[in-house]
Image: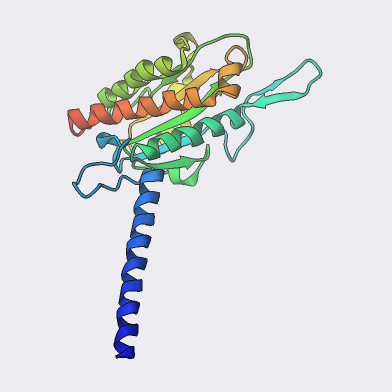
Length: 241
């Protein structure tokens, strides 16, 4: 009898343990945005259907390579580096996208994983020089084999980024280094990609340094806009080179 009672207690303990562990796993999944459906099959609160398990790549501009632009005071003391701004925005944008259900990878500037990269979207995050000018700009590959898809990604950035940050568009300073950005030539030709200059480290320094969450929201909202548009449009058609 005593043996049966111990077996019964062991079974009860095991059931309680399994239920507790399962609850913890589900709670963690919802907290970090793994996109686990609830019992009804619906997506968790905050998850965007078009982003659920979408493959998103972010390049943290200059990471693993150099500091990028450097702003100094009159005495030559470093105030802020471009790489530090890019990293802060990339991390926060990734967090937002993961909470929306996307699978996000943050890459270095010349990351080996860029070679042949296949993803639903890639955005390279940079900031502009230290001059006293305000505005953002973005570009896609000048020779994209999916021009309509690339144009849609750019349109989403031009819609969502200024809405989140309040920054004006500054298209006159888009350069060949942007439209022929090195990563565009390395990734898979069917991976939609863009590069964004978040703002000028001079005129927009308050936003970029003190409120990077606004820039991160702009980047994340741009990507969600694009994923939703692609979900509605269906697969892209490749254009012959």
